[in-house]
Image 1 (cartoon, helix red, strand yellow):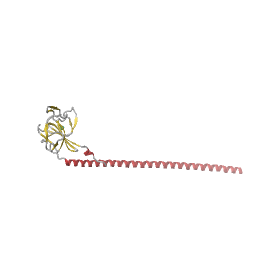
Image 2: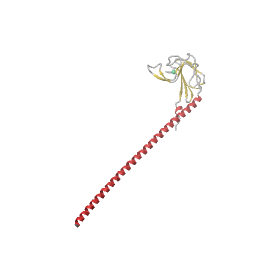
Image 3: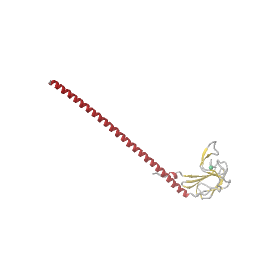
Image 4: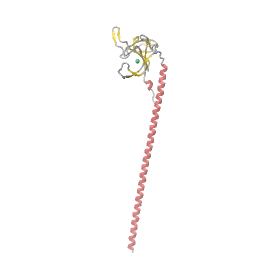
Length: 226
Ligand SMILES: [Zn+2]
């Protein structure tokens, strides 16, 4: 009887021990699941924060880029206005007949379908008509019209033939091409309205006209940093 009791008690103890361990295992499993969940949650929270930071960074970069654009536009406008205030161009020739404006056009001397940028305007007038400086300046370049001058043969500028370039400001030049006669020398100061040559048909030209072009320093448009 006593033995039976002992045996029964030990069975109960074993069962108790078994149940206790089982409960502990279950608790541990639950704890592990909770820990894993917490880890996942914190990882995704970190990722979310990173994403938000990245979005904010991109937004601020975009804003800086926009500001830069606005700033450059403003500055370019200001510089251009400043430059324009200094410009007092008069007509380089009496005619106002523009036979070809600025922009892309079929090159009259090029091949079929050959579009080139025409960087100036072509003004038609009678050969021999006076061509004058549009503004005070210094003659920087002078190409004699093709032909013999003082016993020497000149070919003129390969495109513009008799050709004159005048510098008006540090940022501004004017060009006169296809001249039939020139009467300037390099380094010469020239006044607005002063004759620099006569209209002609020299260089690569299909008829008597003046090629008039203005060159502006691109820096005028580029200045400015945030
Ligand atoms: Zn032209």
